[in-house]
View 1 (cartoon, helix red, strand yellow):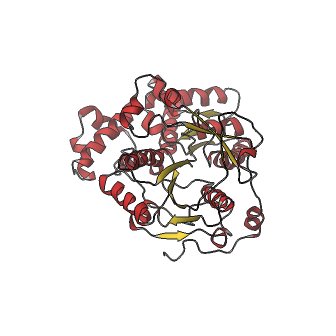
View 2: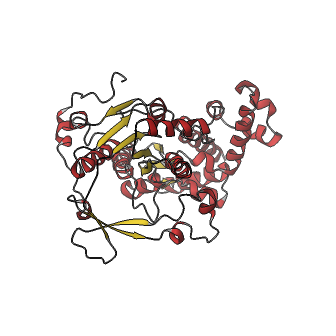
View 3: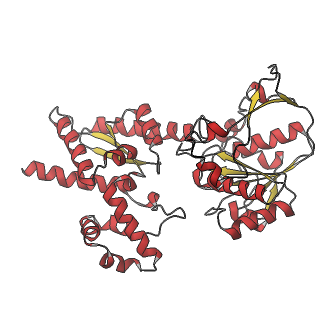
Length: 413
């Protein structure tokens, strides 16, 4: 076992107070008797009628949806589960860190022990790599003691996670069979839950007895849908960021001479930026979805912000706060096309210092127009899902630079 995984740690006074909080379970999950109503999921899961999902997931498509009912509910067709034979369940963290991960494991552990004290919960150390290598830690009350209500993924750790290739899927299946797991719980975001869905399909196809469960833990909030009311971690990240943004807004108002450009989490979805806007009331927010839908160029965005700055200046307001999602850079059509060319060349083995000479004429012109620091960041190798390393691209610094340049031109004019 790796040195720091699952080892009790010293808690601050605030962390100790936080660890005493016990989230309340909904009535339908309280006690050892569970009432479940099963409904057909085919139409709801694939409303287009084209059966796209069925085509890719023929063995798991159309499974009935389970609705947990209040213990007092009387539904004629409800199944009442009172017997719980001992089972073994594995759990791992995948994807990026997000608030609430430790509490998912805490809730899973408590539910297993309430229904049968002989149930076993095994945590895989180091994310998917730990799964493939069968590196486990049995989750107990002692292990959980200093991780309840605490942020981070450090109880089990994670790696650059994916369970996608044939070798990875086979390694996951081998681990589940060797450890005799009845269930495998994958905690993560969009990519991780997509991998979980494919893994469940493969397990069903090969008659593997392990059931795969994906838990939507992602601060981006981009797994919200008709089945998932809220993603674990989204509420916390928005409240924390909104408090910080509000402090910056107060600073801007106090100094009366600064504009702050703040980049927030949010790759393909700008939900965090939008929610923080509603909570903290900055002066402006640029949403990636609106930029993509309106096909706004980087010039258009610069002009919009400069127009707002100029309008505020006419009322003697020379300060403000502007929010941007990290995924904005990929929402700008011409920049996204440039990134596609760069990533294509990188995949062909072209070194970063040779990229600029092999770009198409228009892409080369855009690349040379951008500041040096952004060029360097755009040349980073893409993530495993082929997206740019958005956390490393200083979009807020780029937009601030372009706005400053344009405002200086307007002042001269």
